[in-house]
Length: 183
Image 1 (tube, helix red, strand yellow):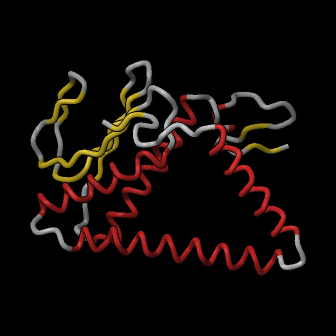
Image 2 (cartoon, helix red, strand yellow):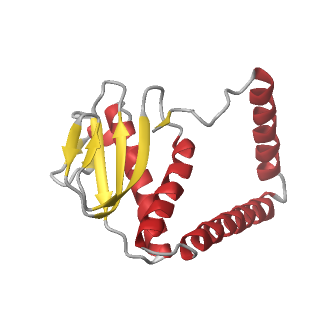
């Protein structure tokens, strides 16, 4: 399982100062007369970088031979992205390929179908499980992994009490049946 900050080295004070300096430089550029052009170029650069990463990931999935190897590669892709979640201390997550046989997760047995299961464990030993069947289409399956990661972030935020929607009463607002807050 991938633990909180397992692959991330703790930032030193110097690293934090450097990062803060980069942010200050960024905001100075945004506030300058060329701010609009700077932001557009910066966002275009980020999009290009994310497309390169996505294409690399899709190529890895495309080269898989057979369903078992494909499921393993999709799980590896998911596991490679867990450190970017920046899970709080004590949280662990893992993607596992499944083949239809029972799997054992922290002492409990679960029936599976061929696909991927994502396991998220909180510091109090609570276990959250989400599973998907794969389409064998790399673009769709990569998006499914990204969706599971987003759901994991939401689960962690909810458990940590960071979501507005988890707040039962917000002064000055009324919560509708659909979960919207209206003044």
